[in-house]
Amino acid sequence: MAGGATSGGNAVTDTYKEARNWLLLPAWVTLSFLVLAPVLLMLVYSFLTKEFRGGVIWEFSLAAYDQFFFDRGLFGDDPAQIEWTYIAIFWRSIWQAGAATLLSLAIGFPTAYFIATRPEKQRVIWVFLITIPYWVNLLIRTVSMRFLLRDEGPLNSFFMATGLVDGPVHMINTNFAVQVGLFYSYLPFMVLPIYAAVERYNFTLSEAAADLYANKWITLRHIVLPAVKPGVIAGCILVFVPSLGSFLAPDLLGGAKNFMIGSLIEEQFKGNAGNWPFGAAASMILLTMVLIILVIYARAQARSDKEAG
Amino acid sequence: MATRSYDIKSYTGFLQITLLCLFVLYAPLIVVAVYSLNASDSIAVWEGFSLRWYADVFTGAESAKFKVAARNSFIIAIIAATVATTIATLAATAMVRGGKFRLRAWSFGLISLPLMVPEIVTAVATLIFFNSIGFERGLLTILLAHIAFCIPFAYLPISARMQGIEDTYEQAAQDLYATKRQAFTKILLPLMLPGIISGYLLAFIISLDDFIITNFVKGAGVETLPTAIFGAVKQGIKPNIMAISTMLLGFSILMVLISYLVSRTDKKS
Image (cartoon, rainbow over all chains, first blue to last red; front, side, top):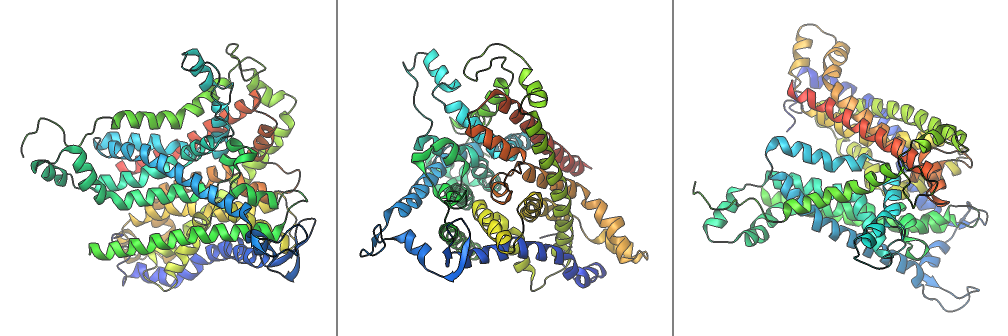
């Protein structure tokens, strides 16, 4: 708990009780007007009619969602069939984000475990080294990755100089490049929660397992992993969710063929060709997916907290 | 405790994976920094060490464009971080010191909203909002959007810091006839300062580095450094872009380092 801060009932708490609404007012106003209201307005926009030069006409319409899910032929009078184009883009996004999450887990778990088992003074430095890249401009990091993975890039020059390959390995503008980009963008989010969980793990449990003749890998699989599971799940969500709606990695590393949700949305608001209600609808669908993941997570978290006591 | 012939904590290969992890995180940044020092006109070949591309950023053909973009970026980041930090400090005071109250969970949800909503969705929503109220897109729309989504980044270190400060100091001050205002400004605020500085710097970097929201709410012809860099990269990565990227990169790392040192020196004392 927060020391004596939330104990209440003294002069200090009383002071802030009187003032707390005023203290919170600027935050309420700013965030309600600039985040909450816009999101609600976006929901409204997704049910409006498109204006051809961008923007909307204030007339109720289900056209945006209809366009997303159904194909009614060129003139809109054929019998409705499922429209796969956009579902496929969402599916690809889920797949790409999932692959990036698994890749991050494979590298992030051992890293987090290793850092958490260092002496305390060293841990701070390791954690700091992992966090720095997060604070570096994501755009620049993605551009760096693009530079690195090019056909004529340093990685290919290295491969060819060592004689590993004869010609350049084509990496840029592939699904693989997008996965690597996402993995690289959000890796620190995987390491930090797992690190926090392993740091709290009671290593006498591992000792007990070893005394009972469990080998180290069995101990890791059956003792350590269940104990740090909440950290692993938190890490996976923190990588998966931003990957799902990312724009920079698919745009700069994936090229036109590896379209993801972010690019689909962006396209609707760019220039004059866009369809605002459709973009709003796609954003709503993305937001709904993210909120469902977060709600499931929060419920599971609450349940495991209850079980733990 | 039984002595074992091996360390039950350590696993073979984990050190190597950790080093691989750091390599993946840093290699692209180092490569860009190294190539920004390339003397060649082309990014594909290395022709020796030179600072010419750094000079080019300041005096070359595109320097005027970069100067305007950099000025926009820094003005917006300074104002957005200042306003967001002020709002976050007040909010954190109410949330940590205000006891239990009905709107507490709701307020926390609202403050963390920009972290939960995918950035591209926030960007779309903000664009729609400004458009529907007829607010002309430009520097001001960028600034307002940045203020809102910088609040949680400033809030988290500030509230974390404040949770570690017992309210006994303020109680003592009030017992000694300090007014409520004095207890806040003379006692709590100075104690919170490391958290506030750390929050300010993080909000500053978040604003300075933002691309997605800025790209949506900026008007035509208005550029910040990230949108200018993105536009240039779309034409192909040129050496001057690597130089300007390296500078921005170094600046961000410097800010994080300061933020880290501020919160660290304080823990020792």
